[in-house]
Amino acid sequence: SNLWKNEPNQYGPSWKEIADFVRNRDQYLCKVCGNPQTETTHHVHHIKPFRAFDSIQDANDTENLITLCPSCHRRAERVVRIRSGLAGAAYTLGHIAPLFLMCDTRDLGVFSDPQFILGDRQPTIVIYEMIPAGIGFAQRLFERSDELIKSAFELVSKCICSDGCPSCIGPGGEQGSGSKKEVLAIFNSIQFGEK
Image (cartoon, rainbow, N blue to C red):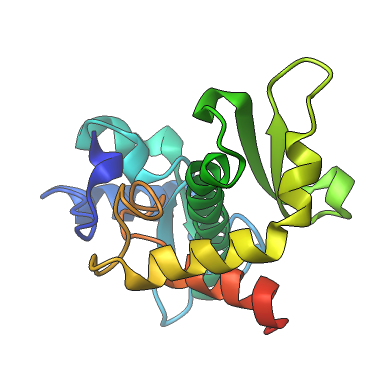
């Protein structure tokens, strides 16, 4: 699957023509802010990430593409990086947590959401027990949360991969590149309160 690759996206030999078609279809207006294209060419953005597809043709289907001005495209990419970084951090925590509890990996579940409603719409990672009514794993993990975060940070920072791999943060992010930098920033922020 393409999700495990970290090479830059290659949109195919027809990308220029497809992008020109989409800009024309969208009347050279940004679909977020409505600004018209000027001397700076508007970008064409994949709604569902390019890496989520197995074929270039499906990824580049014009129904999956919208025109964005450079500013709105940067914001959209930032959201993707946050979501990918959060997913990578959740992957790491979900694989380390059972070691702290000496439990089976199937005893815990992991959930991440960049705007979780129960987390005041802030980026949130939740590790929860899969056992009905629970047996105290969540409480024990909460009590060791500082140690868990420190171990996760060390695992990711010491991994020899350049941009994320299945041994540390899981598959490449939504845009194909890994999320290692974002994951380390998340763990740093949790540990040291850095923004």
